[in-house]
Image (tube, rainbow, N blue to C red; front, side, top):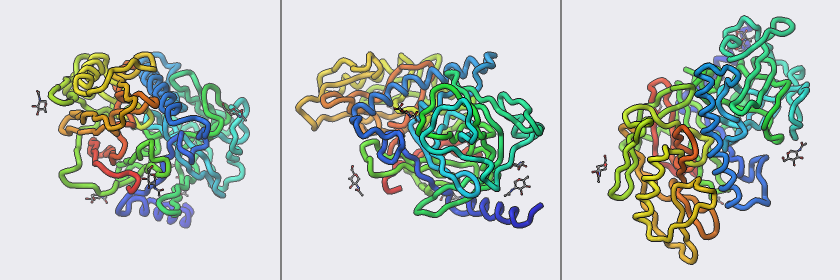
Length: 428
Ligand SMILES: *[C@@H]1O[C@H](CO)[C@@H](O)[C@H](O)[C@H]1NC(C)=O
Ligand SMILES: *[C@@H]1O[C@H](CO)[C@@H](O)[C@H](O)[C@H]1NC(C)=O
Ligand SMILES: *[C@@H]1O[C@H](CO)[C@@H](O)[C@H](O)[C@H]1NC(C)=O
Ligand SMILES: *[C@@H]1O[C@H](CO)[C@@H](O)[C@H](O)[C@H]1NC(C)=O
Ligand SMILES: *[C@@H]1O[C@H](CO)[C@@H](O)[C@H](O)[C@H]1NC(C)=O
Ligand SMILES: *[C@@H]1O[C@H](CO)[C@@H](O)[C@H](O)[C@H]1NC(C)=O
């Protein structure tokens, strides 16, 4: 053992475990800091595109269900490019910046590496493992290699992965260990050695050429949160700023969160199922109406995925219908036709007036009645139309990121609990 390297490793882990966790910026893909930012698109264009992505994500989830029942050609559930947040991470020694998709719905961490033959043509230069003194290929007989859904042994007994997403998109490369450096609050950095990731040398399918990797946060062993494990107290959290606050940045916290505590924190059971984070939604209350979760997504059992990458709440057709009806009964505005072909559960004309009132909507999670105001439940989809940020466009229910704005959402994988605390995420 090299004593210096070992001491560095301990120092890094100790720093992570100390007091609070470390915070990194979560960049919304449509914010000015994102390489995907398109200044020529309007806020309404972005909402429309995100709504369309929301409608696509659950069908990827649904295909994951197929994979579980024997279709082994589909191994990783979600199409990564259909995720709303990005983060920057520096790989290797010397450090090399990667803009990565962040995905609570997928596992493998990967980055495109030199040489990338048969790859999409990415705008940023490729990470070159040969230039990094901390890069180590991982052997076929290693534990990490055996955790992969599909791998082969290549020259020098190195582990090569073939990772296929729900739509058939695929990344192929060498499983390796590398030092990851994260920029935390201010401009402090934290370097964590020996993170296992995929050094991708081939890919196909739908990826954005302005991103060069992915950080998986799903509850599976190769994801970042699982690898950091006890060094982050098996906890991570995020705080998403409202979409309209384009000058503020959302945060991802690896480790203990803000220390938000007291009666304002709601806690609900978190269930890991099919590699997703599931919550138990017993019903939704709006005004005097209580809508119960109905079969096949009945109350009392885990029935809704919590996801950072999907914008809308996706509900069963019955719940979406009942919620839309209850909201239409209360809101004193003309009902509008959904511009997105019945994607939204309800829409209203708001022409002329800006002082309209929308009701609070309470999502009754097991033990946690989460009361959400209009910021978390309605979207301005055009100049003169506001829609409920809920849809039935999918086979699985998802609690999406509009509903999670200005909440500190903490996943405690040790206690199998998820907590919500109302926070101003711009000042988090
Ligand atoms: C990475 O893991 C290897 C094998 O366990 C170990 O020899 C090495 O010291 C570790 N590197 C660092 C920087 O901790
Ligand atoms: C990257 O993608 C954009 C948008 O799809 C496209 O306009 C551009 O030509 C692509 N660049 C490269 C280098 O492929
Ligand atoms: C890779 O890192 C893991 C710890 O994350 C360690 O157990 C393993 O031995 C390392 N392998 C190599 C080849 O460095
Ligand atoms: C950021 O934007 C919000 C609203 O969009 C505004 O209230 C706030 O003052 C801005 N903050 C800064 C630092 O510009
Ligand atoms: C995490 O934060 C909570 C709330 O501030 C605190 O009670 C707990 O001791 C912290 N845990 C660790 C491991 O620092
Ligand atoms: C709706 O549910 C809430 C919480 O379970 C309860 O307090 C309230 O009385 C119910 N309202 C109606 C109209 O059933």
